[in-house]
Figure 1: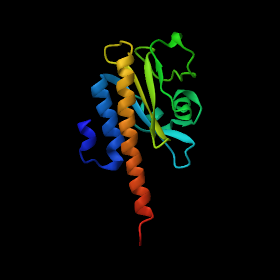
Figure 2 (figure 1 turned 30 degrees about the horizontal axis):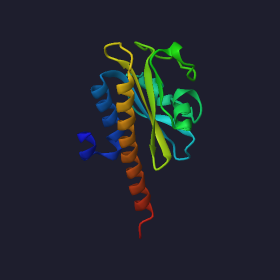
Figure 3 (figure 1 turned 90 degrees about the horizontal axis):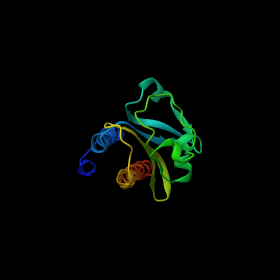
Figure 4 (figure 1 turned 60 degrees about the vertical axis):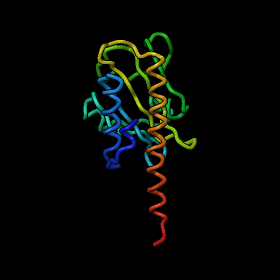
Length: 161
């Protein structure tokens, strides 16, 4: 978590964090989806391993698909093998090296700001409980960081003129 203690360009922070997740979790695919200003739709703020044309167009309404379900319910979704549970439908638009994936909500002060999606471990193995615990812990810290940035932006726009 030394990464979060460093100074960053706020616009580049999601990309920096996604890169960090790919390295720390040894994964080929990771995306951070953030809620729009109306808090209705998630879009990909940063990603690795997804076709950029697909990532640029991806919009997910709260409650729809995997990321939308996780954001709406504020609960992680952890699938070791796709057949072991009945998750929300998968898009199957891209190639995956295993059915295992993790999607965790990014929440701060009881407000969801987005989700973090992790898939395609480099060794092709399934994610485990330790991976889920790490993703949830890191997701919580990221949400606090993003939430803190939002509070600073709001304070700046309401500051005395």
